[in-house]
Length: 213
Image (cartoon, rainbow, N blue to C red; front, side, top):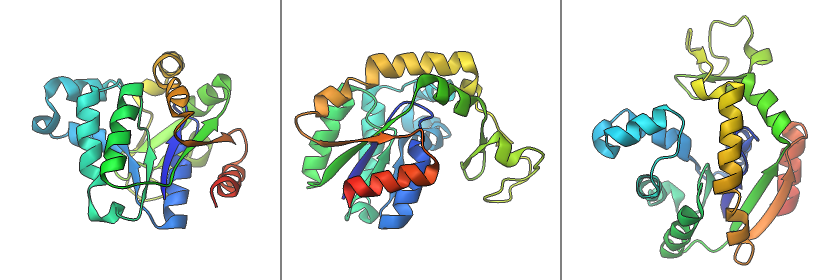
């Protein structure tokens, strides 16, 4: 099984990917995390790409594809994987098709998580992330806490610079213009499962399982 978790920034892709990863015992590949880790090693992606990642922008297709392919050829991906945050452009989607064919992935499902822009803005403004384990929380879950609820790291919770309302609106615009056309590209070649992401986390998971199991 190979799942592509698709949707606008803040729609809940990583949350659902982590749940599905445990349920199906296949790896969760977050391209955002891969890129952030790679950004720590400037030699691996170049100074310019490192700066782009730090600003929350898109890296080149070439860099993103190179890092993703490196993750997918690992042995733990032989039975499938859950891809979160990739592809972001139609060109990346085309390159991903080539990689999936090379690795003989056949059962590919695109989970299209859908929510309104205003709801996404509301979620992201309140989002807090752990620097150590990269877990994501809502401010209401962590208010007054000095340590991460997941890994207990002290003073590790922070708001990403791109998670202010202005930055979020810009990312939504970029998604609509550059990433959303991927659904048209996939319409004739992939199973696309539309998922209502305005439900509770548990409700979204139930709907996903109904669509893919």
